[in-house]
Image (cartoon, rainbow, N blue to C red; front, side, top):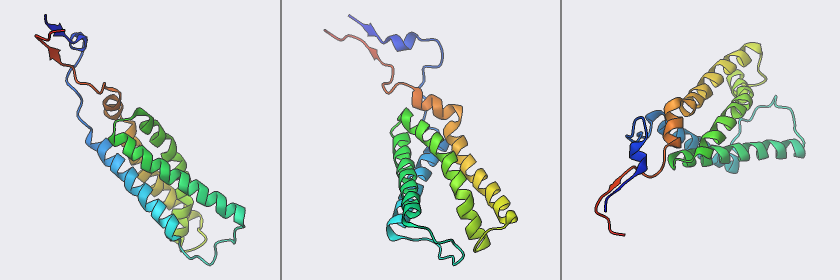
Length: 163
């Protein structure tokens, strides 16, 4: 008796979608950014600006907690995307804009080598939104979504199988 997989009868393209290059690059970026961010936090690598206002312990704790959470989200999202998990795409699409918002001010402080003026904030906003927008686009695009939503098992014909 011959068996035909019902997936072969579905209307549309039956060829499996290959891993989109843009999604692969974005996943690797998320992994690298997450790892580097965690290492920087562990080693306490921060710019030594004398103009930074002194923060109390609760502000420091909040800052480190936010950084740890988003670096771990980046790391897990990147790994999840490489493993073809749909939750990883949602996690990345949610966390990238939030990280971009906080990155604007960090970039501006670095660009101005101290308290940023309006021009440094504007320039940092443009570059930060363009940089993070690129990663958002690569993960958001239709081919990435279709690749992650396709079934894990490939359609196959099982002929002559005895059961």
